[in-house]
Length: 105
Image (cartoon, rainbow, N blue to C red; front, top):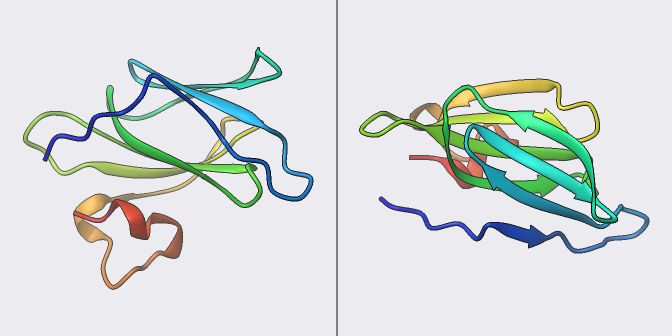
């Protein structure tokens, strides 16, 4: 399945969540706040297949991969870029773990 991603998307603001813009780059994403780089997040695999901000824009889930291989779904802290968890997309079952449920294969 081919997933086309826009180069940049503005994340909506909920409550006091910061307004962020996510730009997909080879090997990860850049997160911008007020037009300036807030963080750079690098994935294990070079091709970003999808992403989603969550928890009031404090976490980002990124699915990456290489051709003909199952994707890897990784959970990151937006501010630090630190990886919090990861799972193969084909191991996401019955909506678990909850943070990865939208990226199951």
